[in-house]
Image: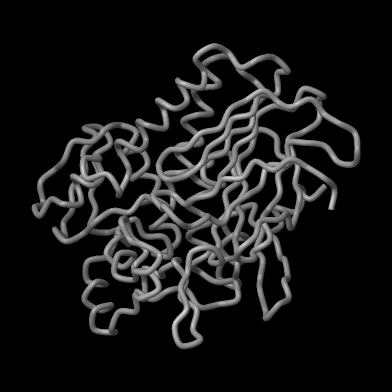
Length: 352
C-alpha cells in the first residue's frame, strides 16, 4: 500500500478502552514525494480523539484550536451519558412525565434521532440505552464487565419494555422533551459524534475557512480541497479487530462520511461473539455477516445515524433501505476470513 499519513481516532464516544469503527483520513501523498505537513491540530474530548486539518496552506488562525475545543465541550456537556451533570443524563434520571427544557442543539439532535428511528422502523432507536447498559456496553462499563455481561432472556425482555422511540415527545418550538414511559432513557452515542463534526464545520465556515477536513471519533466531514488543489482522500477501514488499515479509498469534497461496525467493541462467550450493536427491536446483539456500514451524506449527523441503523438491519435489509431512500452506502460483509463489499447505486459515483 502507498505510504500515507493517517489521522487516527483511538476511542469510541464515551469509551475509555475501545477503538471505534471508522474512516481513516489519508492526508499525505503516495509514493516517495514529500508533501508539506497540513496545518491543523488534534485533541481529545468525549472519550475520543478529534482532528482538524486546513487546506488553505496558511497557519492555523489564532485561537481557532481553543474555539473548536469549546464547541466540543458544549456537545459533551449537553449530550454525554458519562457525565452525571449533562443535559441528557439529567433527563434520563427523571422518573416523571414532565417536560424538560433543553438546549436547541440537544433538541435538534433528538429530533433527527427520532426521524431516523421512525424511518428505519426501529432499527435505530434513541431509547436503546437500557439494553446497551444491560449488555455491558454502557457508560462506566469496563472491559472486564463487558466480557462478563451476558444477560438472561428474562432480563432482556424486561428491558425491552423500556425501549421505544414512540414514548419520546419533543417540542422544537419550546425546546423541550418529555417521556411517556418514565423508564425510558436516551442514548445519543449513535449520532452525537456526527453532530459534533457538523458543529465544528459550522464554526470553521463562520470563520471564512473554505477548505478543511474535520474528524471526531472516526466520523469525517470535508470541505473544499487541499492546498495543492487535490480532493481530500479518506479511506473506509478494513473491518479487522486489533489493527487499522484502509480497505477502500475515496475522494471527499463538501460531504461527510460515517461508519458503524461490529469489529471493535464486542465480547466472546462460549464461542459466540456478542457485538455492541444492539438491535432495539429484539434486545439482542446483531448476529449477521455485515461487518461495517459507511454512509456518505451532506450532514455527518445524518450519516452517523443512518450507518448505525443499517448496521443493525443486516446486509439485505440495509441495502434495500439504502436503495429506497437513495442513500450512498458502502457495506462490507465478512464470511470467515474473507471480505466482500457491496454498495448502493448512490454510492457508486464516489468510487471514481
